[in-house]
Image (cartoon, rainbow, N blue to C red; front, side):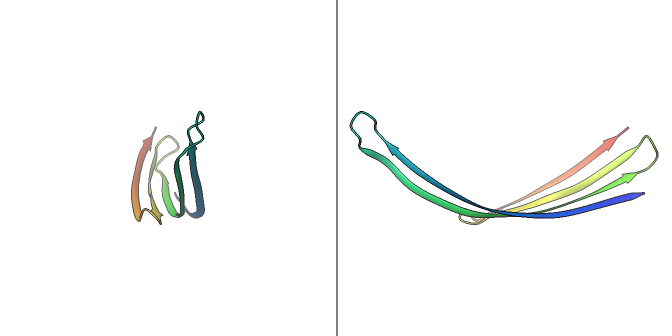
Length: 79
């Protein structure tokens, strides 16, 4: 018996770094960053018997701003 699952998610991240020297009040850093993150994931659970289970799947993520994409495969066996 197979059980397949799929999902997607998205978010937006906004960060502001505002660092000052406390003793003199001088600004050391002022940096704004924002990015959108999108991800899709899937997995397939195969119950070979009541005791054995195989599971495989993966996740793909993309971050704008950094132009980064990651792929994460996943495999597991349970007894």
